[in-house]
Image 1 (tube, rainbow, N blue to C red):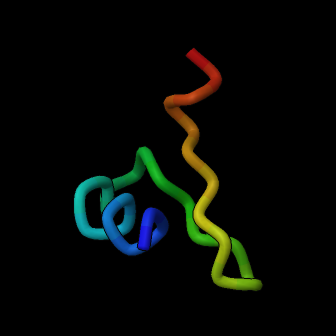
Image 2: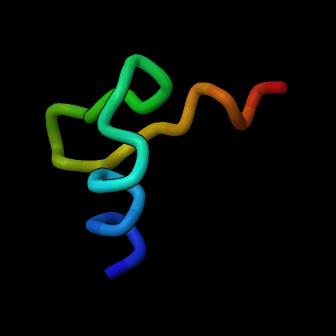
Image 3: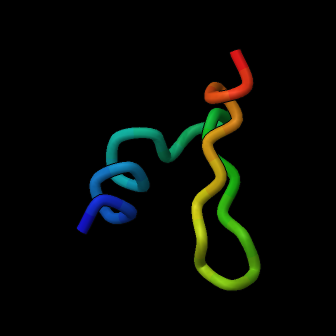
Length: 30
């Protein structure tokens, strides 16, 4: 469920979806 919320909330350049469907939050590097 968390991945869906993140995808809906941060469906911008901030989040890059992996080939396996795993979302990688880029802003987490901050």
